[in-house]
Length: 215
Image (cartoon, rainbow, N blue to C red; front, side, top):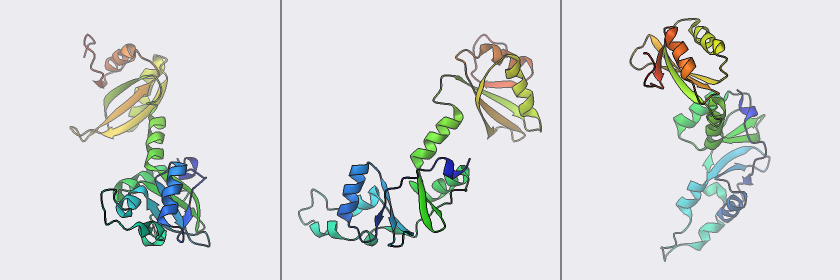
């Protein structure tokens, strides 16, 4: 999946000349936590987060607080040359960038112009969508050998039971390097028959470990 498929195209921005007060007001109005900062020519030059603002605004308990801080330009506190991505980058690559750099948003730039933005919340929601976790269903975990064609063999069991698969995730098996763990979400609240079918076909079902079903 490409970033352009999930990015927000309407991006709230400010310029370097705007003040900290402007940023606070805009974030409250738009209910956002990140503001890309653009130059007068429209190029991305920085980003300001709600955390940046909290670090500089005067504390309510500080009698010596300097009210002039609200009039400082955003160029004084913004993160300059922020990490960004391209609309044609993959969402999976963006997730790695978020994780490696511990950031909360990723501006999307094309031809030196800001064209969108994604946040960690956008990625989380897309994960929920891809896994089908927001739909009623059941989750089945199956240990399989890491060999070509094994996913097809497992899927045949679901086909035989006329079971609709919502998603399939593949994880490494921490206990056995030669195996993989398939996490399969199915559109049913009663997966007992397909669990029996998987075990009859010789597959090891790790979850659910339902009492009364032959191992």
